Image (cartoon, rainbow, N blue to C red; front, side, top):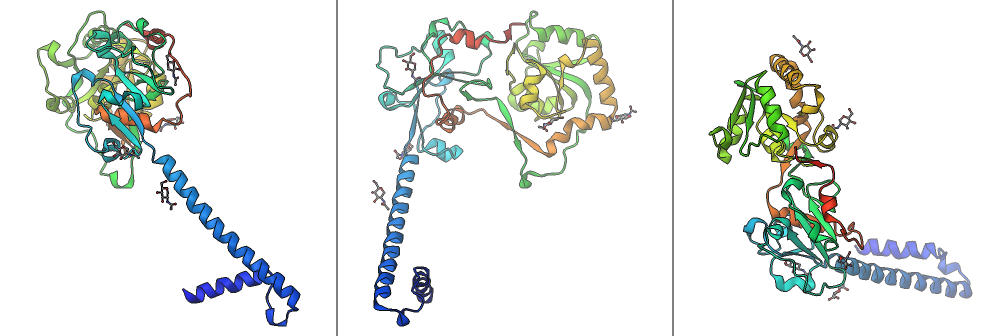
Amino acid sequence: MWTKGWDFTEDLFNFVGCKNMKKMAPGSMKQCLFLFMLCVSLLYFLGRFKRGFKNYTYHLSNTNFTILLWHWPFGQSLSLNGDVCWDLYKVPNCKLVDQRSFFPKADVVVFHNRELIQGSQKLPIELPRPPGQRWAWMSLESPAHNGNLQKFADVFNMTISYRRDADVTIPYGELLPKEAEDHVAQESPVNKRSLVCWVVTNYQDYHKRSQVYKKLNAIVPVNVYGRWANAPLSSTELLPRISPCYFYLAFENSVAQDYITEKLWQNGYQSGAVPVVLGPPISDYKAVAPNHSFIHVDQFTSVREMGEFLQQLAKNQTQYNEYFTWKQKWKVKIYNDWRERLCKICKHKNSLPQYKVYSDLEAWDKVNYSLV
Ligand SMILES: *[C@@H]1O[C@H](CO)[C@@H](O)[C@H](O)[C@H]1NC(C)=O
Ligand SMILES: *[C@@H]1O[C@H](CO)[C@@H](O)[C@H](O)[C@H]1NC(C)=O
Ligand SMILES: *[C@@H]1O[C@H](CO)[C@@H](O)[C@H](O)[C@H]1NC(C)=O
Ligand SMILES: *[C@@H]1O[C@H](CO)[C@@H](O)[C@H](O)[C@H]1NC(C)=O
Ligand SMILES: *[C@@H]1O[C@H](CO)[C@@H](O)[C@H](O)[C@H]1NC(C)=O
């Protein structure tokens, strides 16, 4: 250390042009020492400044962003003890609370739509909104189940939904690149016993999916489970029931922009059956799902054509297996904890617009949507 320190002083001497001090005239020696002292002081202040700057930035980033959840979705509360966002999801500086006394300090106040439209919860419109505070409208339902939102004109500053154009997007699932430690032997689809399976709880004749099902069932046999078929499945029975099927009908209950639910992410991708999807246009699926991982109803000019394609695909092992190659590169992450979705708001805190008001939330919600 000492030698190092000495080397440094010598280098500094050389730097200010005092290489051969002993042979110098007294005048240039003074100048030399002055320069030396100047350099030392400069370095000292630079060090001070750097430390101070670090402290400053540390301080800035250490400020919590406070998210107040006004009421729990579906009345099901979860623990918010400790630093939840950091402890569970490694999101820093994010304070998630559900005590309404935090209202004056909250950066974002989140309102889950279901309870508002049912009337079991109310917006605190009588409370003065602290400047800069944002009110967020949150829903994972399709427009068909969000109710009439006209009464919420000019109330909310942000939206939290599965839609890609929401201020904070909380999808049902998403793709993550596989990491080295994830690489396991390629899971090849085995023990397929039936061609097409469907699970349906809420069957309505007017649903587009019901029409497609009826036509398809007339061409190829469809095994139907779920409450409608008097064959309800518990959550643990679901995937084992789907996995012996070549294809699983991941048919959404309504057709709306980006409305792609656990029917694809979980029932489809995690069962080992190839999902046949009905929902938003192919481009919405392509934006979030891997290439060649699903079959879209719109790819065919008729249900008959689709039925024949599925039959032929099940017979060709090579071609069928191509629908699983994406699993070599990608893994699926399912979201099912509201706390994780809420902590996600903090990741977007710097990209939220300074000022925004949803003057017509109803129009925003009902865009690109059809009931059938
Ligand atoms: C950083 O700032 C905090 C709070 O203002 C202070 O207590 C601390 O002493 C500072 N640290 C340094 C290294 O300056
Ligand atoms: C931020 O919030 C967490 C969780 O409530 C808390 O543990 C932490 O002390 C807070 N930090 C600051 C700087 O207020
Ligand atoms: C899907 O294919 C397109 C072109 O064929 C390519 O640009 C894109 O990167 C692919 N996406 C993924 C997730 O592999
Ligand atoms: C099976 O599919 C592969 C790949 O798509 C194709 O090359 C092959 O000709 C098909 N075999 C039969 C018997 O149709
Ligand atoms: C949020 O919306 C309210 C009501 O329209 C508005 O008064 C307020 O300025 C907005 N705040 C932000 C941060 O956009």
